[in-house]
Image 1 (cartoon, helix red, strand yellow):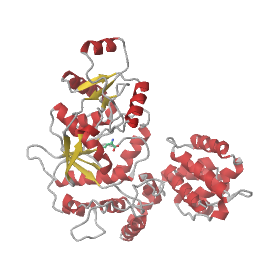
Image 2 (cartoon, helix red, strand yellow):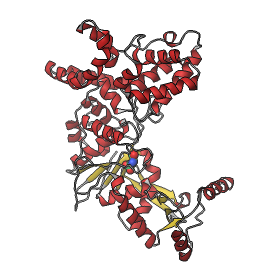
Image 3 (cartoon, protein in one colour):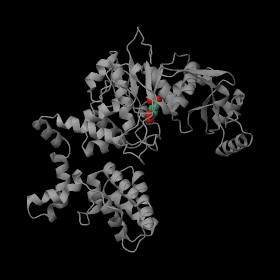
Image 4 (tube, protein in one colour):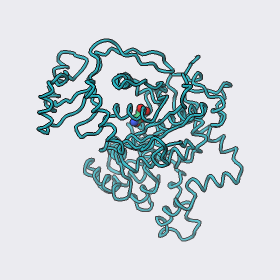
Amino acid sequence: MTVEIPIPTDRPVRVRIAPSPTGEPHVGTAYIALFNKVFAEKNNGRFILRIEDTDQRRSTPESEQAILDSLRWLGLDWHEGPDIGGPYGPYRQSERTELYREHAKYLIDEGNAYYCFATSEELDEMRATAKEQGLRTAYDRRYRDLPREEVERRLAAGEPYVVRLKMPLSGTTRVTDGLRGDIDIDNAELDDQILLKSDGFPTYHLANVVDDRLMQITHVIRAEEWIPSTPKHVLLYQAFGWEPPVFIHMPLLRNNDKTKISKRKNPVSLEYYRTTGYLPEALVNFLARMGWSMPDESEKFEYREMLEHFDFGRMSLGGPIFDLDKLDWLNGMYIRELEPGDLVARLQGWLLGSGYLSAVAPLVRERIKRLGDFIPSTTFFFGGFDPLPAEALVPKGKERVEAYRALRAVTEAVDSMSTWDEATIEEALRAQVEATGFKVRDLFMMVRLAVTSQKATPPLFESMAVIGKARCQYRLREATNTLKP
Ligand code: GLU
């Protein structure tokens, strides 16, 4: 495929990733970061990390920190970002809300956006009517042309409002994607999108466009799942009278069955890969091969070699399969190449360093007579882990399907936890005792067996806290799948 990505001649290439800190650091974020970084470096540009934390309810500082740590672990470091600053900061959207409000106000003053006072009942009613009449948009634009005095009156009365963009009522909007060419969207399919929410916070669309502009982003390289948002962004650039950046949408990573990568079928947390013992360079190599190839099609190459040969023309769009067997194979090759001294250093940098050992040691101190007992009594903290067969997991007197349902409920409860410490784990598991109707002893034993493969272990919640959420999730999911009738 010959692909010509336009490169500006009058200003530097600037690209960014813009993760939302709402959960575990995701492999997809690392994938997109890698291609942004290599493109920036190939073009002597800058790679920026921006935190999109406008969803106040779901964003957490722990998640932000985990994203930064994981990307650094992979060597995907950035030139500007919330932790290191830079000339276009702040790099965290929650610190930029005034800018978004000013920009929304500007659009209103220019006649390109408006205050919408629709109540949630009105919106429900509009949705129902749209459904009934088979309309493609759900909002009937009833506040779009409200007389000025009426708007003033409602604002003065303190009525809650959102700000919406006036979308064109007819015609098409063209999105040009660097890898896919032109995509034309019928404007009649687009609702008047919300720019500012009733809490005064911007939507993703407004904040994303304003920041890309103010941070002088030249190329937006992001996942395919954002294609439906892009026409909205293009219209927003037009409303501001700005030239949009070049858009490049990367193919979605897929599970073996071709569905979009999901934690149900693959571990997606970078924490899982780090704690399980993948080498960062192997994971980077693996991600680089997702849709991209070296001119000689070799499987094993380092970032440096990717950079040397990088060109979006070598990208193929058919959804790359995230195949863990292949990652294991690559990782094994990287490990075999390490000098013995390096291997020792890697082991110590992994879980055999004093940090992790200090968390494990107190848990087994009461249980060992000789230092040597430490090794057999702690294997599951490190990964020496043989999943048990279904018979071993089902509590006495229970049917396999009951055990399956109960463990699935536990797994889902663990998935939705946003803090991970002894107390929250205990709370979440106790809630599942009630929910499943299992006896405490039975349910906790099943979880213990799923997570450690052993009947006797140090206290369960503390052990899970130390093993970490990502590996517990993985082990629980594996055990649930084993029980599946
Ligand atoms: N905040 C979006 C995300 O979570 C950013 C998408 C984009 O790159 O525009 O991925």
